[in-house]
Image (tube, rainbow, N blue to C red; front, side, top):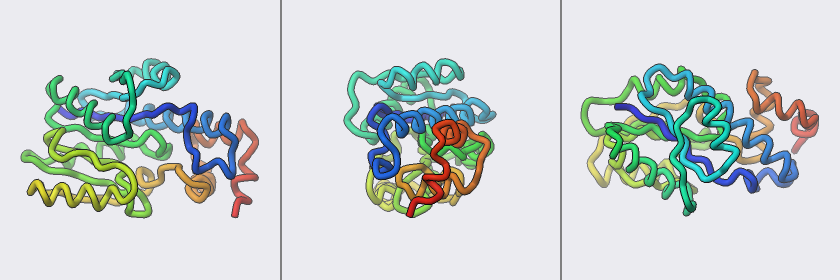
Length: 219
């Protein structure tokens, strides 16, 4: 069975790297809008057998429930890697043969993007990656089995994950995807996102906050 996980940290303190451009309340509003975009795409996936967020954020839980996404509730968070490995083990215990992890801050992701990864799952142990657009981060990772390698999220995680796959003798493939690859962490990411004028909750939230021109003029 193919399970999908979206890890979500406490979004009340989200996106500190955008602090030069947006105050905290705007960063938090944007983070929730992006999460809703991602979970809406996940809801539409035809190939995911079960769909989860892992979080302790109350509003994220509310958004997920409203979209019919299952929830793995944490009592504490010790970083993204720990959250993902915790949830992956729970999914494995539930019968998952593979687990796809996607980010909650890539608002351009589509249901077809998710299914593109899932349909490339192999019959044998394997890993599929989608790197961040800078090819440093890991923006999606499908592991079969779910604990094939430990999570290594953070700086240069794409290389670290590939090294773990080599270390464990697990074959892997990598696919570039500009929508999954654009997670919104920096002002440059946000400016690129705004330039695409997407029909997303995130873009609509930036319109509502009346800060599109401010973002476009950022340098």
